[in-house]
Length: 244
Image 1 (tube, rainbow, N blue to C red):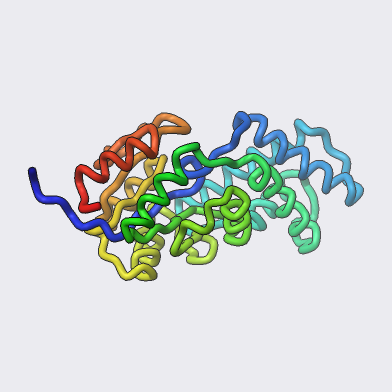
Image 2 (image 1 turned 180 degrees about the horizontal axis):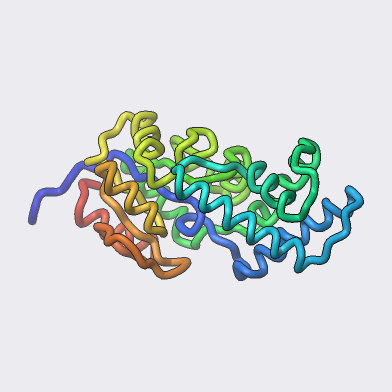
C-alpha cells in the first residue's frame, strides 16, 4: 500500500455541491422573476413576468461578465442595480434596490436542498477530527448562513468563507487561502470539493487536492484528482488516499 496523506481540512463549494434547487433551473428563475415583479408592482411599476425574466437574465449575464473579468464579487444588490437599469427604473433608489435584492433571495432560501448522504459524510469527517469549511462565490453572506441553517448543515462547518465578504471570488487563490488560514491548514493536507471548472482551477492553483461532485449535474472542465457522484463514494475515495 502506498503512502497515505494526512487529511486536516475538507472545503466545499455550496451551489451545485452541497445544495441545489429541488425544482428545475428554469422554474427557479421564473420564481425569482415573479418575486421581483411583485415587489415592483407594490412600488407602482407594472411589468409582465416575461419582461422581468428577460431583464433578470440580461442583468445576470452582465454581472457574470464583470465577475469573470475582475475575479471580484458583485453582490445581490449589485445585480439588483443592473436589473433595474435593464428595466429603465431608478437604480439610485437605495430602498428599491434593497427590496429587489431581497426578492432575489426568495427561491435561494426556499428551494435549495442537500443530497441525502451529505450529512453522513460530514459527520464522519467531524468524528475523524477533520475540519470542514464552505468556500462559496455568494452574493450574500447572510443569505448563505440562512440557507445552511435552514437545511440543517450549518452545525457541521468550522468556517464559512463567502466571496462577498472577502471581495475575491473563485478561481482567485485568495478565497481558498483565507479559509485555510482560518483553519490553520496547508493546501497539501486539504481537499476542495466543487462542481464547476472555476472551482477546480482555483483549488489546483492554490495547491489543494480537488474533487468534483457530479450528483446534481455532469461536469466538463479541468480534470480534478477525484470524480464522484455521491458523498458515499467520496468518503470511500478519500479513505483510500488519506489517513482517516
